[in-house]
Image (cartoon, rainbow, N blue to C red; front, side, top):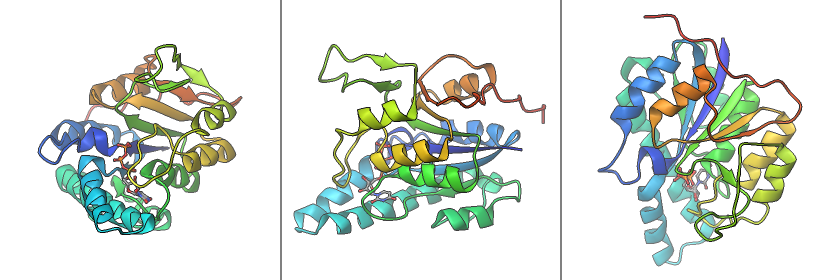
Length: 240
Ligand code: UTP
């Protein structure tokens, strides 16, 4: 079966705890799992930023703030497991190795963060490398990768396709403070480059867009790919 890793940004799943989108995402993920081996890495969202801010107020160091962020991503991952019910493996994988152990049972494997000084995008990229995913999808709250921050620079242009080297150049200028909010972090960009796994950066605010892009090859987001073959469209699942 095709193996797919999704990085589901906390800004998508948990903009705030009250405004979570678990009920919108659960059926989409369960549907996908009928045709692919599915791994989902969950981000921290607004709640992680609030906890990190509280830790910073106590003058905790950045690595400690990252540890706090990781705990929140794992709590969010646990909530997603609850929403997925029997479709998910019942424990949050703490490392990519554990995620591999939990796979192969026909269940969706869910992870949060792993180690300080990175984001869940990097976790997802390393996981994609370990499980030899056909595609890594980063679901975020922007519609793709831009040459500059479109909120600050009106001349910023969106890439519909770019090479991993071009991604490294764009990401090179970002910051990596705890809770920082770049579209893809540097570690993730480097892993994408060395693993040669295609990365799709896609707007996650409409969960159904993911299905359309995966199965109907609707042109959306940014595909980061070198000279390897585009894995899309995937074969549609057979009816239940
Ligand atoms: P993320 O930045 O990955 O969550 O983790 P997010 O909210 O999903 O980000 P968006 O929505 O994609 O923008 C939250 C914080 O947890 C710490 C970092 O401080 C990160 O900013 N973290 C997370 C780590 O230190 N290591 C990890 O492996 C994951």
